[in-house]
Image 1 (spheres, rainbow, N blue to C red):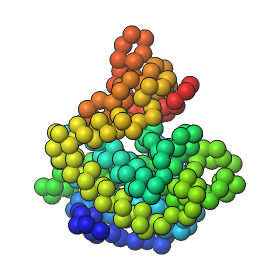
Image 2 (image 1 turned 90 degrees about the horizontal axis):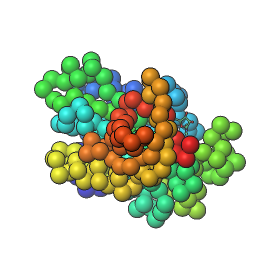
Image 3 (image 1 turned 45 degrees about the vertical axis):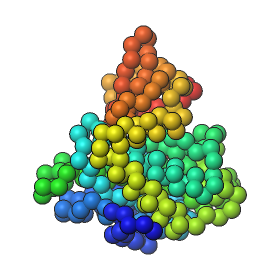
Length: 261
Ligand code: BT5
């Protein structure tokens, strides 16, 4: 693998959550670039208290510690960088038809979820940053070899989840996919550092975002609204046209966005 900032790869046979592990490391002052990879998570996290399911040894469960020197309002671009790097790595296996459902899902052409991204940070670790930019831990679960087919899915994920191996028609090497993802992420992380790079991330997200152009329902803490997603802002947020106005939806405010409702 070419030199990247992601050389410190910590591997776990079993852990509660790779995101939790790196948040603790960040609090203790760990530098950008630490990677945590698990064969199995006993408490894999999704957003908003949801959980991430994966049997042991089948899928990629990986988190990275980033410390991008960007404004707080642009931090969604860290999620974007990870999502785009995963799309890059999956495409490099020969699989086509992968896109991003805003804010954090990789989906196939039928809208089935191939991967989910979870970015987390906290005030305590920002305070303990020791001169370093505040951390953001970005985790991604990629369904690599599970499910092998639809019958392996629990009822609640039937028709909703798909794996890279299903789309490839053959088992996929998890380690090769990890290294390819980290190499792609290095290029995407470089883009976080400059205005031109950040514009490229937002532009690439727009190009690969299946949400733009569809009807969406946005559930916020204080009510919901419907509209048409018309674009991606320079910060990577979703632009929604609704009732003659335009609203920009920040990932942290979104309880639920569903295309086609
Ligand atoms: C996500 O949340 O999609 C973010 C998932 C992030 C998981 C990674 S694994 C490494 C790192 N360490 C962690 O602890 N987490 C990260 P959300 O958008 O809330 O979606 C969660 C929902 O996706 C669940 O409620 C299920 O409906 C569904 N789901 C769970 N497991 C799935 C899977 N393997 N494939 C597809 N969908 C799944």
